[in-house]
Amino acid sequence: MPVDTVQLPTASEDDSVVWVTAHKIKEDPQRVPLSLSVFDKQMLEDRRIDDIARLIREVPNIGMSALGDGRSTHLSMRGVGALAQPLEHDDTSVVTYIDGVPQPLFGSNLRFLDVERIEVLRGPQGTVFGRNAQAGAINIITRQPSDDAQHTLRAEGALDRRSQNLGQLTLSGPLRDDTLKGSFSAAYADQGGDVRNQVGGWMGREQNGAMRTTLLATPNDITQLVLALSYGRDRLTPSNFVLQGTPNFPIVALDPKGWAHRETGALSLTANRTLRTLQVTLVTAFNRYDFDNLTNNSEALTYGTWFNQPNAAFLPALDWSTYDEKQRSFYQELRMSSLDKALVGRVGGMNYLHDDYRLMNDYTTTSMLAPSNASSMINGMRNNHYQTDSYALFGELTTALTENEKLKGTLGLRYTHDSKGYHAHFQNNGHPGNVAAFDQQGRLQYDMVTGRAALHYQLTRDAML
Image 1 (cartoon, rainbow, N blue to C red):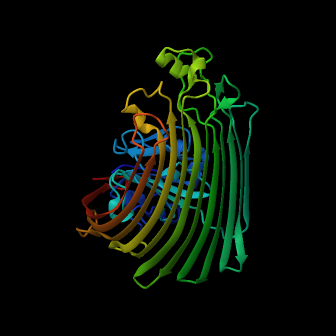
Image 2: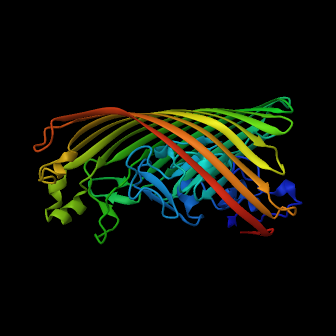
Image 3: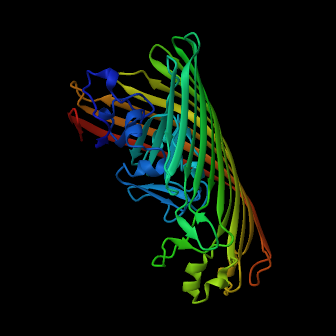
């Protein structure tokens, strides 16, 4: 199984091994029977991997589709994922975790802040990572507060309007003897727009702000508590359509100019207690995601060419839409796992997820662009509300099958019950040929059993079958 990471040392150099938690237990990546790529903090800094877009350029067999609005982004691995764009907020095959907490799909286009390590796991990960991990998972582990006082300042800038200006500050250190430590990180990035708008201004600008603060308490030698709070704010002006081959490319003609605003927030508490033969972990977390945007769907240069009309026919826009999304989720996981370097690696637990998602979408297109009854069906306002309650039990065991421990076996099983409620309402905006209104609601139940079985043989330190 291939493993990509920075100069992994021999097993005797335990202090410098880049440990991973791909099975939610601490392991040497060269002993993990998975295809994974590991990036430690030094590699992230050296390669200037500051966000998801830069990360995927360094990882094989992973793809990303994005429209530049921060929302319409999805990942695929080994060709498994949404065909074009996610159909709804739960339509993904690659799940992103931060410190053991699953992130909202539309909030997964992340800017990294104070990250210790990133593990990209290719292939089905449903046994321990659960729902929506059929293609793989991205496991992000943030940096813990340091034992001594530390501070870092990073600043980048350029005179070129299209360049990125970046500022980042990190403070970390003890707050009370050896029992309480804290850290605070904040970053702001401004990427200039590079697509000229004939109506005025530039498109493609991205302004991203993020902060994270962490408290680490160790009341005794066997107990650790980590409280983390994070917030992100994005202001974007995406250009959805750019006609190739136009003079002064890239250039657009948009009136009104589209925009997108996104805010994310998270609060989590992780409690670890080490017992004689195992470690008990309790994770409690809240996530929020808010998104508002205006999209001009009839960029004049593109639509003028398409419909053989003068560009002025599409100024102002004849086709536009707005999105107003709000998502709130609560996550709870209790798990027990083997201690470091245990002869038998094992992890088992249970988790619960409650997710509440609301969408209000107003879509308007004129009769010129939607002359038929079929195409006019997009006109109107959607007001949808979805609630999901997901319960899961899981367990996985890895043990040596021979005395020399070169041949090992892994067996895992997971049971999931999902209860999904929905209430969808559509109201026509007066366009002819469409229904006046539509309303549907209900609740669906799903029971799923997934698992994993594997045999793996350690040929050499760096090669496994």
